Image 1 (tube, one colour):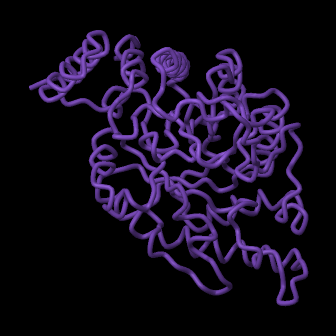
Image 2 (image 1 turned 90 degrees about the vertical axis):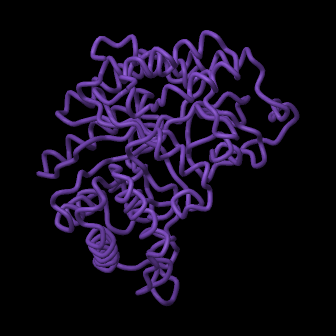
Image 3 (image 1 turned 180 degrees about the vertical axis):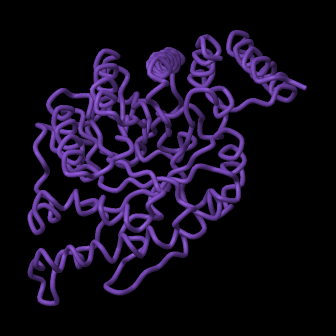
Length: 382
C-alpha cells in the first residue's frame, strides 16, 4: 500500500524525469491527488460546470472525484439560473450539482446569492420597468435567499453571499442593490443567509483584493459588518492571477490583513493567465472586453516549454505562500478543471486558446501540477 508521502515522492520523480511514458507507468502504481497532498493544510477544489456534475463529461468527473474535495458551481446557483422569472424557480441543474457533491463526499460551495451580474433585470424593476422600492427589493432578496439557501440547508456547506461589491479604489460599488437599498444591502444579505441556514459558512468573494486600495476597502467592509454583529466566515480571494501579478508580498500582506480581522481566507477562483494582456489593470469584471488585436492569441498550436515552466514556477510560488498561511486558509479552489473548461478562453477576448490551469485540455497534469505537489512535499507540516 502506497502512503501519501510515497505518492508525493513518486510525483516529484515524475516531474524530474519528464517522460510521458514514465509518468504514465509511475501514476499507474502510485495513485495521487491534490486533495491528499494538502490534506493537512486546506481543501483543494475546482469550479465545475454542468457537463461535469451531470456526468456527460466522464473524463472530467473522474478527475474531479480523484483530485478535489470541494467544488463550486460555475453558474448553476447564480440568480439567472435558479430564479429566472418572478415567482419561478428552476433547481434542475442546482439539484444535480448539490447531489453530485454530496454523493462524492465533497465540501459543497454555493455561488453566489447577491451579485450585480447574472441577475435578471426584473429583480430590480417593477411591472412598468421602473426601479422598485427599497422594501420591495429587500423582500425579493429575502425570498430568494430563504428559498435557495433553505432548499440546500445542511447540504451546501458554505455560500458566497455577496460577490464583488467593492470597487478598485476601495469604495462600495454603485450596483442596483446599492442604489435601491443602500449600503446596508450587504448586511441584510448576510442576515438573511444566516437565518436561512445558521450552520452554513458565509463568505465575501471578490477579485483584485491584493491591490492596496481595494484591500483596504474589503477590510473596511468586513470591519463594518463585524461591528454590526454580522458574522463573515471567510473572504474569498478570487485569485485570477497573471505570471507577474500579484506579487508574493502583495499576496502575503493581503492574507495577513484579512486574518487580522479574525476570519479565514479562501482562494476561491484560482487561475493564472499566461496570454498577453488584452486590457489595462487587473480587474476580473466579466463584462469587460479586450482588444482583439494581432498577437493577442499566440499559443494556438500549444504552449511553449518556456511558458509552461514559467507557469509551473508561478504556481509553486503561490502555493508556497498559501502553505505559509495554512493556519488561516481553509480552501484553494481552481476556477475550472482543465484548460479547455476555463472562462479565460473567452474573456476578455472570445476565442483565445488559454492555459491557466494545472491540467491540460485532455485533463493531463501539466508541469504546474507537479510543481504544486513539490511544494506540499517540502512543507514541514507534511
